[in-house]
Amino acid sequence: MSGCCGHHGQFEGLSADYKRRLWAVIALNAGMFVVEMTAGQLAGSRALQADALDFFGDALTYGISLAVIGRSLQVRSAAALAKGASLLLMGLWVLGSTVYQVFVIGVPQAQIMGFVGFLALLTNLASVLLLVRYKDGDANVRSVWLCSRNDAIGNVAVMVAAVGVWGTATGWPDLIVAGIMASLFLSSAFQIIVQAMAERRAQTA
Image (cartoon, rainbow, N blue to C red; front, side):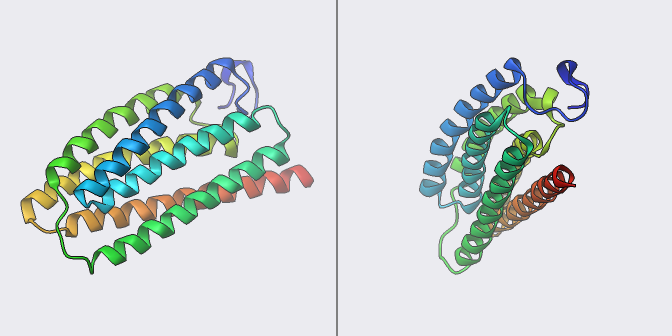
């Protein structure tokens, strides 16, 4: 972030405190990926599985971000491009699986969706609070914040979907939320890729 921790210009992650916070959210997100993917399979919920992928993407993003801190702008922007591409692929996967789910008989279990969605929301709020101080910066740092934001929004959406499934006794609320989350993946991927490419152009200009 601009002027953060004595730095001028874009914050590049060169902070011991920032690194400690990243390690904490890596552990939180990796654990919730396992929990939510398993629960999504048991409940038959595409929204839960989509949100689990978001947790996986975050854990991967934080790990890559740690690895490239202090490296050249070219390396950091390349890492951001890779993370943007991974978000793009996840968004396409969620869209494809959502379309497939339309033709599968069965209604997701709203109780499991609601409980796990609430647990995931608490995890994401903890991550957001840990990272909010560093929400601005270069493409590498910004990708971390965007993924954290996606998680928080996604978990609220899963809980809304659970209420919709319970109230309508159909799977359509789950599918709609999964589709919205897929668009969020794609939007974040676009923002990260555009910023990373702009930084690479500025470096070579």
